[in-house]
Length: 142
Image (cartoon, rainbow, N blue to C red):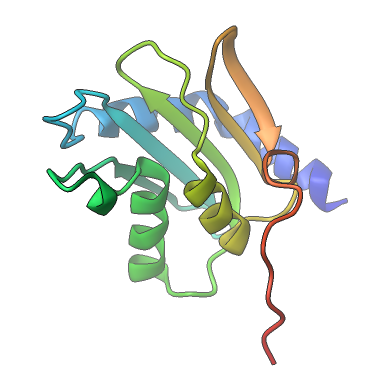
């Protein structure tokens, strides 16, 4: 049942989520790579939260668009957020699936069947977070 709800929400919002991701990619701070990425999250409360990648001369301090959006969502709506769908876009026309760190962060807040749409070698591709990270690190909190 939950999967059908997530897919329906995603189908109805896919294009607007991708547009939001593309728009926020314009705000990327990427002077070193010029790889401009944006992400849009559809939350369970219906809100759409966006984020852009922010580079640093010390590359390890760079934050990806997906994590930028997640941090913003938690700051705006609190730690109980649930992500129903994710759209990733870049302005470079290159494949850009979420990296491993972003997948792990998404797994913390997203429903396992949350669809993620992203640019791939053959065009746009959609996978669930569970498909992208089948063995996510988990910890049961008491």
